Amino acid sequence: MQIFLDTADIGEIRERAAAGLVDGVTTNPSLIAKAGAGIFERIAEICEAVEGPISAEVVATDAEGMIAEGRRLRDIAANVVVKLPLTADGLIACRALSQDGIPTNVTLCFSLNQALLAAKAGASFISPFVGRIEDMGGDGIGLLAAIRDVYDRYGYDTSVLAASLRSPAHVEAAALAGCDAATLPPKIFDQMVRHPLTDSGLEAFLADWRKTGRTGLDG
Ligand code: G3P
Image (cartoon, rainbow, N blue to C red):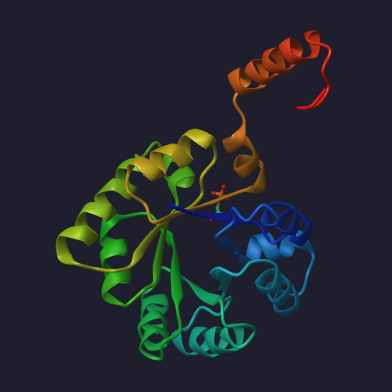
């Protein structure tokens, strides 16, 4: 499963990209606004920092406007993926951009029907919002599994990108549901590596080593 960072904070992205474990980045208007950056400059910086797909979202709400903005965003760099909202206009724009060979990420997906339509419109990625579904008492992970099942059953090659993930457990559940990718805030990315038994186990190994009087491997 590919791991994307869900942030527009370039410092946070660069810090984590250095380890080579970040496969892409997703942004949205809220994240760009929070970063206090211009969208064109910030997306260009992110595209330089990470080689994989970088989602940049349109803000127009009509299909024509979305298509025009999508083309401008795509002109920033070859790894830009145009992010479009799951509305009727968003699907028209998705179809038009996809037919032009421009990769798309259809976002704000909350139902299987929406995911089905996005796939039919040629979306490269579908972004179901797990956390926000759970906020409403729904089954976000169940939706991921249902989309995976339907896409496989009907041969759609749209990638399932689990979004709005709020915990490391969500990441594991997305992987078990067969998602192609998951996007997560830097904090959750950092939490993925940690386990208290790893820390205590390492401490015990090193304490035993120190008791021998050696500091490094050689002495
Ligand atoms: O990837 C979508 C994400 O940015 C939304 O997350 O936590 O605001 O629901 P959240």
